[in-house]
Image 1 (cartoon, one colour):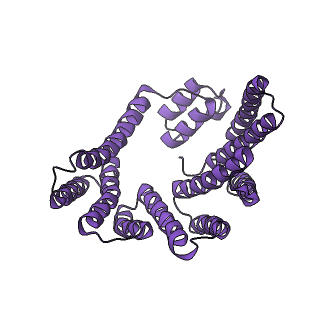
Image 2 (cartoon, rainbow, N blue to C red; image 1 turned 180 degrees about the vertical axis):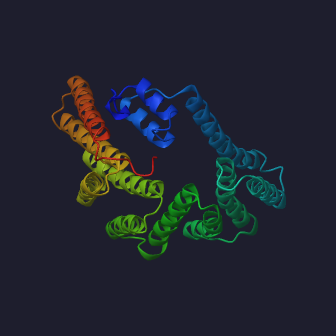
Image 3 (cartoon, helix red, strand yellow; image 1 turned 45 degrees about the vertical axis):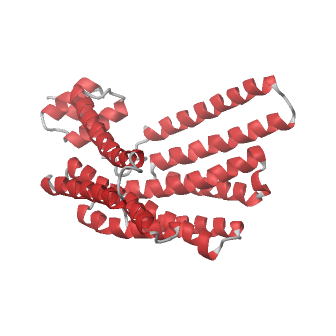
Length: 326
């Protein structure tokens, strides 16, 4: 009786044989290879290299146009600056139109268009002295990005749109509604981030849209919490409370409910950062001086090592799959 292919040892050679005979799909084979710790093939390295170079080229195109206008500011008429920016947007739109629907090249060209609309609005405001506030700029930018995001159906454009909308909301609160109330501003912004994440999860949005929103929200409160621990910045106990609450919520939701390894890693990094800041603060309080360098370094190494081992264990757990990475 011929043994079942599933009874063979879990090795890279067996995996390749099963894939070649059609027993495993390419997607399943890639996931299994990742679990086995197999190194990427030459074809995969080439594909990833081309992908990263394409996005790097798109980013450099955006930066190049902005820096060219800035470097030649005095020699360019305001209308020439607007015309150059508009021509670049039109050219990127033409490139996107010519590409295959859903391709990475089309997504990169559309992202260039979306990113250049912000500098375009800034140039318009400078040329005509509109006097618009920062929140108005980001709100108009988000409005102009909306059709690109809808038509492209890509996660990256929705990430950009979400960030612009959040910035517009923050600056509106800071410049209009809560100009002198920092405590209320932080509470409202944190609550808005939580509501946005909950809404995106409810709508089953692209996982990377959710991840970037969570990452931004966590980074914001983490910086405030670290400033309070290390420097007693602004003497706001609310900062550390928000940092602890968001970190604990990220741990609980994405470890037990949503099971997203990337966001568990974000929570782990936040925990390591907060714990390291506590160690540094204690070293400063007790004036350990030179010994503090060794103590802080050893504590950070231990914390990072524990976090890495924990994440590796989660990654190999059969019930803990990464969403949206297939």
